[in-house]
Image (cartoon, helix red, strand yellow):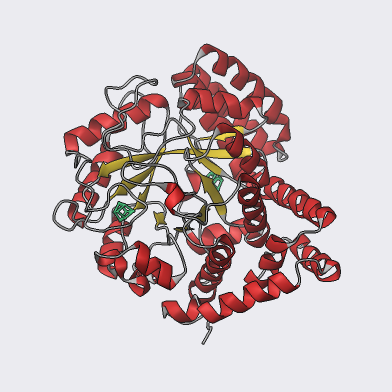
Length: 475
Ligand code: SF4
Ligand code: SF4
């Protein structure tokens, strides 16, 4: 039976409820009166239930779809302004005992070299990332209790936070590792991680079991209940995601929102982020083998509908997507993107921006531009690339972050923080053209800080950063 408050995977992600939701959405996809009612509800910016959101996703009425996109854009603007938070993935190890059929790190793949970074190699990778300008990382590693035990992950986090190289510093380490125990989540919390990210891949149990034929990840309930254990272990910020293209996207969409509703119902706080990866080409993997791939248009509609359904949840898009797809997604709801990413183990240190090792790549990177190029591009599109990590460092996580966000207060911090961290980037890492575009952007954005006192402090801090007499300021 469907119960969002249950701690059992099959009750809070209930197959029957999803199928009924999809039938309801299909029946009402051209029901203009109902769609108007849902859109009115959505305009209150309090989010939508998975049933209401599923109707919007299915809607085929052109004028109503236009309103859906407009509302998504408006909500994006109201909650996130024109800021985009930057991050990069860091692959520690591709040893893995699972057999996910869509991932080249699956254990049967014998043509991929297996690699695990030593602490010295991690240092070199992090210095390379710092030299690009990154402040926020997402750690990635396969599941292998012998090669990548939790102690290895904890030691690596300590190493990363401890590296001070020139003006660089990694200020937030998010972690994407396999589902684990409450005890291990407590250890990750103590190590000072930011968000714990775990993609569900697919919410459809039968498909899930087929896609993960062996290894610990085969256990659907253990995987699906991981976020509850993470929160029990004290981790406030969790990041959800599905791999679009594995199962029917309407099913995934409903499952994803039901998972968000479940976290809110049980823990009083929804997911911190939602990621929207799509299956990509990789070694020993053929994406055409999955016949549920989605078009760019459907992808855009999913992003818009998630934005409307969970306005307080950040949305992430990676370099799996091309420049064009990312540009469209940014306006519809994405608030975080990666830049200059390498999806291989040891892909940063010792390589020029144009070189990329392919031997251990997890997936093909569509957007191959450097971080400087992505930052430059974002600014020319009118966005402020932000390297802000203030909330985490001020202890504004979980429900504290959410209540600030729900009161609209978070924006009083985000805008000046974005400008100050961008200024640091321009001073330390940017190319000449990026510096010139960035300084003009900062000048034009200063008057948009509404509070006089905050604006005064901002101007003062910007000049300290420029003169080299201070940095790492935050509101
Ligand atoms: Fe291993 Fe993760 Fe790849 Fe699955 S998706 S094979 S768990 S690295
Ligand atoms: Fe994110 Fe908080 Fe910084 Fe805003 S102030 S960009 S919510 S870390």
